[in-house]
Amino acid sequence: MFPFKSNRHYVRFSTRAQIFYGLLDGGEIDTLAGNLFDIPRAVGQTHLLSDVKLLSPCEPRKIMAVGRNYQSHLKGRKALETPEIFYKPITALQNPGDPIVLPRDSRNAHFEGELVIVIGQTVSKASKSEAAAAIFGVTCGNDISERDWQNGNEAEGIAKDLQWWRAKGSDTFAPLGPAIVTGLDYGNLRLQTRVNGQTLQDQTTADLIFDLPSVVSWISQWVTLTPGDVIYTGTPGNTRALQAGDEVEVEIEGIGILRNPVVAE
Image (cartoon, rainbow, N blue to C red; front, side, top):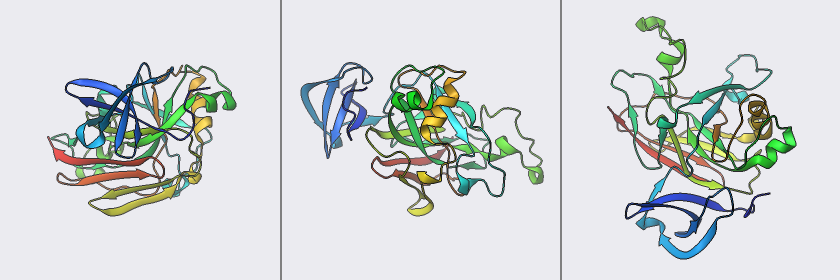
């Protein structure tokens, strides 16, 4: 079992060109030394949250994601019998507060507010119970998706890409944060996504088709997961295109708000 498995908020932050992990409590951060996924220790140094720059809360070796994993997102399509997994590149990561950059030839990039699993220990060919034990915590994510590249647009004469490498993986298309939180009931958290203050997604993770341990167990049958790896678990309801000047907020109960402005390249 991990240390500090009760409800705690872990962040990764920079100050004066140095990067640390920390334990967030209200408006203060207790700085931690050591690897977050081993036994981090407090060093007796605190920072005000307002004085630091929050970064993506971990440094994954892999970013994976689940497609069509909410009943409310199926839109009449048949539910899959097993989780459908895809990759997003590490270079797609974006920090809380930093911009989602729409590529110059993108016209239909959508938000996808999501609960994100953070893996805490190496896991391979895991049972469901072993997979559950390997989950360190969860955070908020936004799986930005360029629909014309992903699905094509017949009216505009745009053929879909064979792979989702740029539709899901362009730079800044994976905002993550603000904190990794432990000890939550992952199966019943309210998720809301807002654009310019308007709520466009509002669902609970009870609507997930495949729960978090099932997703981790499934992936681990073929791909070994390692500490810090993250898995975006799918988006509920409907999504819509973003425009330069928008601000997107993904808020998940017990975790906080992942907020990112949108700019054009």
